[in-house]
Image (cartoon, rainbow, N blue to C red; front, top):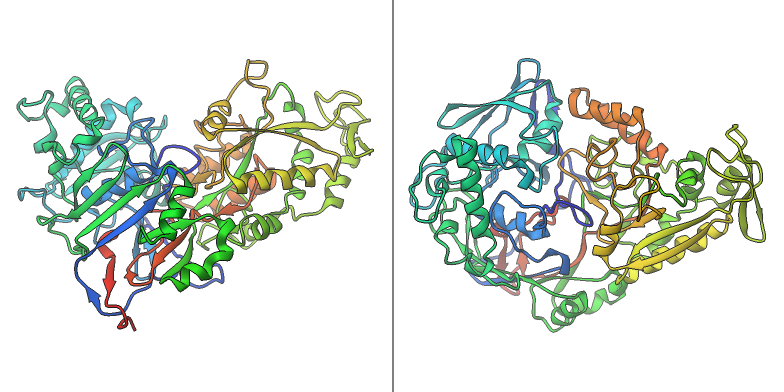
Length: 616
């Protein structure tokens, strides 16, 4: 599930480099240091049956074309697409760990050569499209030509990355492609964050410029690729026709569409022409979106879904669901949660640009209490830009320690050492100037430390967290004004801006109730924290951070991520907040094979029911 932007930008997991050849692997671990928990299995399987999975309000599926368009980033679009059209690389579960290759991916281990400026991608030879035509390198070339000619219309496009970083696309043979890159790249990063974008699309069925027109090699010219793309995009906007449109019947995955309603409810049934290994056990899977969490909770409590979720605030009722034949299992995501600082704010920008002020405020974020009280223990601390849960090769020992543990005394000391006086519960600058013991550039004498925060409304957990933060900041004389708005309004008002522009008077912004950012496979920060990046909403800019981010992208040094992660953890481009579970799942005990992948993808072909009373 990979929408393009917060609050749930769901792409994830990891990779491990061996020499010049990359095998992308997340060496998954549980919070206690063990491996990622396997899905509940065992029992006597019963072939067939229907499983209904509840989708959260922000995850309504509304796009089928495997090249996602901006504005169509619903969380489950990507998940469904991969069940119909196998990805070349993706995050999949294998022997208790996460890897980018498996029974439901098309690519073999990529081979890097020529000083990491060339990557060769081998493809499986056993997968066919509906009707029996093999999936070949031409189908990947078709995808590449479409995104190259229409990159501005592709939700995953970022300037300088795929397809910009490919100088030449080469078809070696029917089952091998080779990418000639514009420079040397870190194989770990390139496989994890670039090759996972590749798709095989049915060129022989889709390469036409008009409905009813002749298929051919239209994609091999820019003009033709634009027309082909426009046609496929037009068909993608007709949700109600997905189950009948001939275009979407040419698939190569384990599932096919039985129904896709305008409301976003999707029913999937096994693809009888699937030639892969992992075939579905169930007769049908229904993905059912709900307009509100309350409506889903009521249906779940009545037994109306087999795989649902509950808000953390009702975790105390866990035993009630367990007594009704469910298990309760928080679904941890590969994500970070944070409050954005607006370094260009016309109001609090000068304060935000002072590292010591950001350090003082981070000391006042009591992540443990927030997790225990607000999230009922279902949130993990965010200690920097690289997630520390689950444990991976991307974290060093230093990164696993809180650089700014909760301490009111430390926060007050930082402020007073830099020219602030705290009287009557309010901090004011009494030593203006740019010296080491003064308030800093742009902060006037007697200026109060007052900040405004745009915050998502409609979430009990978010409201409680923001109130806790406001109370905690006040202990060091910092006044926080919270302006709650609907999520879309917060996102719309938190865009990068220039100082003095209308609408650039906000100081801080929070939209991360479901996690602020879900990472690509490699948790690099080029989209978040590099100067001018598309998701750098707070205008953060630091030349050293830019160098460290480039090193993660270009250097094969496995410690590059450690240096980047620790530096940003200490520099505080944002305020780190508790990272909640993607959802607290409630699943029928007799429904097995469900892996709650930290990348937040699903593989219902692995799900099955067991005979009741014979599950051990």
